[in-house]
Length: 256
Figure 1 (cartoon, rainbow, N blue to C red):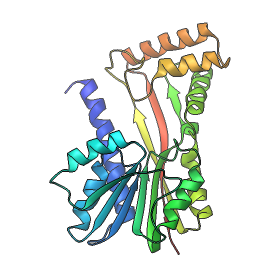
Figure 2: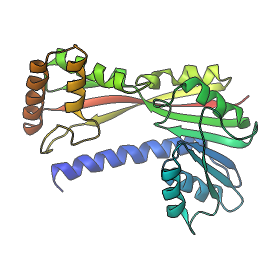
Figure 3: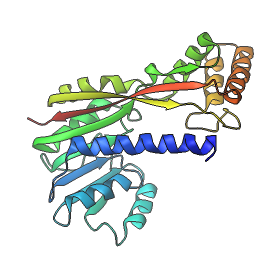
Figure 4: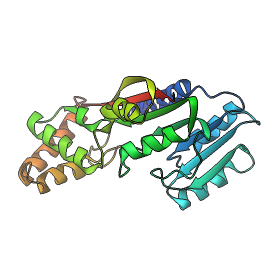
């Protein structure tokens, strides 16, 4: 296994661990009813359907009909307990107390109003049910291997490009404001070393070149600083000195 393959394996292991933890906190019961907000291609909805069994019900909700069409194709014949709904998380099309639990993973940072989405998830959850949410906090990101002052400016610019880039650390407050009790939160560090990458520019999960250009366009750094920073970053990747850390949060609340 080369360095690139090891990096991808680490990323996959982190994602698997997060998904397992979300399932553990949600604690789906056989025969239960669960909602996945922002379900994408439906992988997590299908896993929930497997756990709740033939008497359970899982709904995957996403804003994109095209994505849901692909999810339905993937689910055909294998997950009869899953249905998919194209709808807006700000206005969930379900009655109060429709589900035993709700999950949302890497979703609330992209919506218009995170509080409204969380409150809607709480509304459709039964008393005693769980709402579990996962989100990164780009305000926590750090980069080692390039000019620190420029790195901070670039990360801040990238965080601003995400609608609610720092929402992760605010998840406990969102859950409490939605009327949920027994709120718990965990911090997870997502590490990226990039060792063995052919170049750091636009070839991994976040595009450092685009982030540097955004920082320059905003006047946070000069074009020359952006180019020098990218060159330094490439060199640090080649030498194996690069490290990036991003803190992500998973939080759970119980409907009283």
